[in-house]
Structures are given as C-alpha cells and as structure tokens.
Picture 1 (spheres, rainbow over the protein chains, first blue to last red):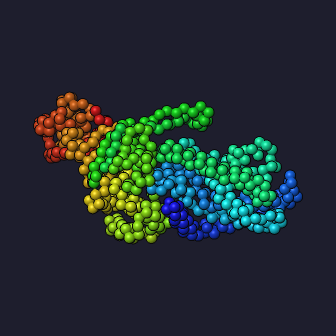
Picture 2 (cartoon, rainbow over the protein chains, first blue to last red):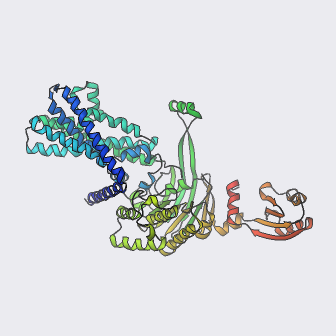
Picture 3 (cartoon, chains in turn green, cyan):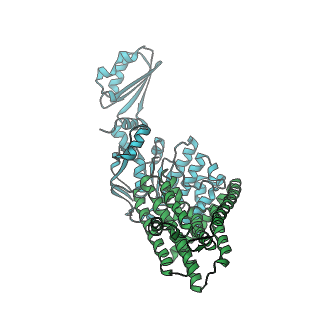
Length: 266
Length: 334
C-alpha cells in the first residue's frame, strides 16, 4: 500500500515535470497541438470514408463497428499517454548508455522509465475514442446492467496492460540487441487489426491477434461483450488473463535484460 | 567499506569485416569474440578514504566503476559496499552511493536546475527539513545560487559539473563515485571542485572513489592510488610508495655552449642504458636528460657530463608523479 502511494506520488511529480517541460518550449508546444488536431481531423475523414462504403460486415452493423473502433482507441490512448517512454528504450536510451542513470537510482527502473514521459498527443486518441463511443452508444442498443458497466470500466486498465506488456517485452530486447525500436514497432502495429471485429479476418490472422499478439483483447472482445453481453468469461476474463501473462513476460524479460545491459563506453 | 575481489567482466563483441559488404555478411554469419574488459581486479577502500583510481584510456576503469555502482553485472567476482551486493538489492544499495559521470549528466535537461533537485528529493525520499538543510550546505560548498533557476541546457560545463556533483550528494551518500569530474574544466573550476570534494570528504567522512586523467586531482585529493591497465591491477598503494617504487627517474637540465653535446656524451653507449631508462632532449643550449638513477647514480651522471662538455647551469629534478605514470602507461609494469 505504501509502495502504491509512493508510486502515485512519483507519477504525479513526473507528470508535473513533463508539463513544465512542455511549456518551456512554447512554440513547439503550440505547433504540436495544431498538428495533432489536423492529424485527428484526417483520421476522422478516413474512418468516415471507410465506413460510409460498408453498411454492415459479417453481421456487425456500421454503428457497432464504429463503437468497436472507438473502444479500441481508449486503451491505446491511455498507453500512449502514460507509457510512451518505452519506445525510447528501444531506440536510444540503451544504445547510448543513458540507461546508466536509471540503474543508479533507488526506484524500479521499469517504473521510472514508464512514468518519466507524459505524452499529451495521446489525448487525440482518447478524445476521438470517447467521441465515437458517445455517438454510437445510443444507436447500438446495449442492454445495460450494473455488472456490465462495472466490467466495461474494469476491463480498460487490463486492455491497456496488454499494450504495456507487449511494449515492455519488445523494448527489453534492446538490452541484448542495443536497439529494438523496429521490433516494438512491428509488434505494436498489429494493433491496427484489433480496431475491427476479429471475425472478419481469416483464421490465421484471427488466431495471431487472439493468442499470439493478443491485441484483439484490447478492443474487439471486450467491446463484443459490451455490445452483445455474450460470454463474459472469455471476452472479459481472457482479457484480464492475457494482460497479466503479457505483463509478467514483459517484466521477466526486462529484469533479465538489466543483467545483460552493457552500457556504452565513456 | 568497499570491497572488490577478483572482479571480472567479459563482453561479447561482433566481429565485422570492413565496409558495407562486411556488415551484410555479418548479418547472416555473425561472428563474435569475447573481449575481457576487466580481467581480475581486487582492492579495498576503508571508510572515509579518497581513492584515486587511475589507468590509461580503455584500461577498464569505467567498467569497474559501473560494476561498483550496479550498472553492469560482473561476469564473476565480488564487489560489495558495507557488505551489500548491488545485484541482490539494487535499490537499497544505490541509496548509499552517489555517482557522477563527468561525460554524462543526470540532470533534467530541459528544466531549471532546481527542479532536478526537487525530483531527486522524491526519488531518494529525503524529508523536507533535511532537504532544505542539505541544499543550503551544497549551495555553500558548490555555489549553486547563481544558476539554480536556469534551465540545465544553458549551464556552462563548469556549472553543470558542480550541479551534477550536488545532485549526487542530495541523499547524503556514504560513498561517492566520481568518474572524471574535472574533465574539460578550466583551472579555477577544477580548483573549486577539488576543494568541494575535499571538504565533503572531511566534513562528512564520505568515502570517495575518483577516476581522472588529471594527476593533479590525484596528488591533491587521493592518499591512495589503485592503478589498473588492460583490466588488471598494476599498482595499489600510497603516492609516496609509488614514487619510491617507480620514482628512480631523475631529470637533469643542462645549459651548455658545447655543440652536439648529445653526440659527444652518448650516454646510452657509455653507461649501457636500456632504451626505456634514458631519454635525451636538446633544444638550443638546453639539454634535458631523463634517466633511471638506479642504473647510474646522479653524481656519476653529473661528473661524467661536466667532464665532457662545458656547462653554464645545472638543475636536478625529482620525478613527478606524472612522469612515473607516463612511464607506466607506456610500458605496463614488468
């Protein structure tokens, strides 16, 4: 409990530092926001073009598909907002030997890396996700119950953890290879499949995004439960199990990686 | 306090043939070889001592420091501080140490310096009242006041180094590791930093391990030297021991009118010096003779020289530590 409180405190401190850092470079910050709004606008256009062509897909109505798409942006956005710094591990922190300083501090290295950055760009995904959900929610005709609302909210952190676990495991490969940015990217991009109903893919792709790189659990399966109320044991339960397994694998690889870390000459 | 025994670190290094072709080839047929960066290092540092840890570039100093600070995992061997092993409980281990790598900074680059200390206070869980006292103390020793509100990226190297040393001391560590803390600094800043290190060592009994290429740092601060080369200990002892053991080098300066004095004298042939025991430099009327006084005593050198050439002025110099170390770095130790 004390540890958890300390973690939250550290997290808050780092977020505040990041916000100060952003305001340190005002023009960059403002242009960043403009760029981000433009990116979201084109995104919206893109979704509209795709979905205006397909009225329904293998039994999923357009509004349901948009709901799934919107839901997928929530864990993705949270991961992007809070845990984006793992990319830097893969691209340069390890390669340049900058990981040294994290090892000399009395705080968990993975935690330190994760909370050090705060990526405001992610608000785009989050706002978009919430907006799409809000727009489609009245149309898709969900039967609500208290249990469902609780499960729908509770599944979001676990869905986020799937992202974090996959990124941690792939980023930690850099401790051996010095650079793993492209490996993270390769795995991370699989999440593009997860924005749409997994049933539209052939079995090969479906099995990969369900059991191997289980991004389907970040969006389709939980959203399916919310939409239809079907099989919560699999749709929600497996999300929780998958996320815990992935995070566990990620932490194990990370801890092994630290022992293999070679720093850089100075 | 610090205990290091038979420390060894091996790295795997991929061997590539030159050029793009070689790089592509190694992509498919990777060849790697084992590089032993630290072969076998042992030493101890008692509490409150300042240890000068020296050696030529690539000797393995930084690798040893990185193992001692918990950054690298030793391939074999033991290193402990107060009986604690960095591999067993890294977090409680690093609370007791402070680290400064002169070539890197641990300060938050984009933020005013003060913010870094605020974050470090939280990371090291320093209570508010202790933190205030500590900052006042560090400010007094390292004189941070004038730039504590400036963003770190705008600091000069000397300010940044002082700021980094302060950052490593926020949590009052028992051991301070300084890896080249005076690199690239001007004489005045070097003096400030040396004084600060000396003061902190005296005042707080902080054990200091210092690596540097500036031997003045060592002479002024360290009572003891551990010298390593090619990953092994070559010397462990006080500066006076170093001088006694390797310091038979003397330097004679002659001011002479005789032309071709060097040829006339031919010390090498006359006294049968080994090449490493003798060096002669001539510049105008000045002649500098550096030789090993255990082979030929100074008096004999002098009387021989005075008998052969006409000399206006003579001076005899003791070997300084720099000269000794230059010889050791060049030749290794027999």
